[in-house]
Length: 340
Ligand code: NAD
Ligand code: TDX
Image 1 (cartoon, rainbow, N blue to C red):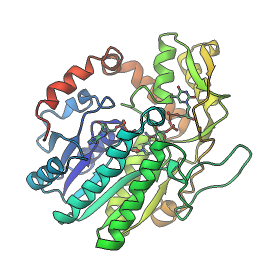
Image 2 (tube, rainbow, N blue to C red):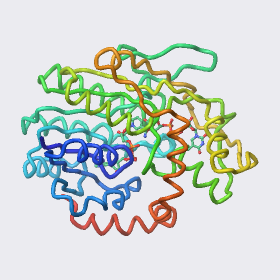
Image 3 (cartoon, helix red, strand yellow):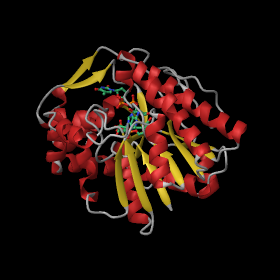
């Protein structure tokens, strides 16, 4: 099988590429990525001599670039991870989120129709359902209404609706998965877990928004990869699948667990001004995935978190290049060949 993975130089997409090459020794993987600030091309360096892997610099919102990649590489399946993914950035500057996360998906969907792609899978998020307020209980199922709070989650919700429309109107074989918060190796250090690890390592203050009581459901990235694989192989045409971690923690508790793992003092914690429109709790019901195929998370959070802390300790070269911005130079060298 020939997989086109968009956004594969980022956190989850790169983990999925490693997963695929390991699991399917006869498959080919093509990665199309714009190499934004969130990508570090060094993540994919171990694949430089891998004959089953091809990297293409390109923007999913550029129709010509997408069509030229589809035409040259003739993928069987497209899995779209490409997106602007950081909520705080979307609050400051929404436009690029609409362009990449919504318009980019429409460009991909059109290309799938034009090139007769067998499967298109859209990686979405639990954030499209909106949140449960403090004191409220409950879980969102795949049938819950979409009620996104931030420009990021609105741009993702719009893409989900487009996927549904391309299934209904054109009969395209589309699936969508909505996942909880991921953690693990290669996560860009602007997100809560890697930011806390790296700040604590250099004894810098660790920012906790508001009172730290907001809740997130955590899933190790390897469990997310396994779920995506299942959905791509077995998901129904037009199917939507929640991928939950069944692992809810308050932010303050996650931060304290990381500090304890690193042997650092809780005095590093700084409560800061809250995020605008800050979602309180998501609460994802992942019964469908469990009932259909017996999927459930394999990685225990405490062990997965300890393993993630260790990964950052052992891979200083990777994150140091991000902190001192030298990774951008490497990205720019590769972007010289960007599809126009
Ligand atoms: P990330 O920010 O680490 O990586 C995103 C990648 O997409 C980067 O390599 C970037 O260069 C690329 N990209 C951005 N815009 C592009 C464009 N226009 N064309 C081509 N490439 C582009 O993100 P992530 O955390 O790996 O998230 C991947 C996907 O999973 C996103 O769609 C996100 O919405 C979704 N998701 C993430 C989480 C999470 O906890 N991180 C949870 C649920 C869903
Ligand atoms: O410095 C911080 N301090 C803090 O308290 C940061 C960066 C975050 N937070 C809080 C905000 C959230 O309640 O921690 C929680 C997690 O924040 P993020 O890591 O920014 O993730 P979140 O906003 O929950 O969104 C993530 O999960 C869903 C991903 O970034 C999205 O791409 C995904 O769709």
